[in-house]
Image (tube, rainbow, N blue to C red):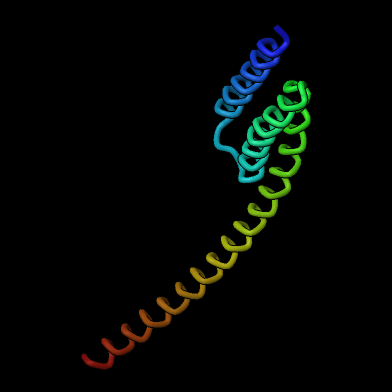
Length: 114
């Protein structure tokens, strides 16, 4: 009886997290990492907890630890994405300046031809 209640609670919590996460628009990398960590941690914690007779507690503890770890990893990855985006923007601006210079040279070249 206790095992079925624990599984039902985990299923309800997981369904709630999925529906809540899907309703708010796109998730940040940090939020995705936290969600993946929470689900993975809850699954691992539930399995470990089941071996010692407390699957619900194991899932709760594993979910909390996974949430924290996933958020940290997601935050790091989000920072890396932001740095890469900034570097890409700088490269785009540099390329645009080069294009502008080349266009000016082409215009000058055309003017001297006629």
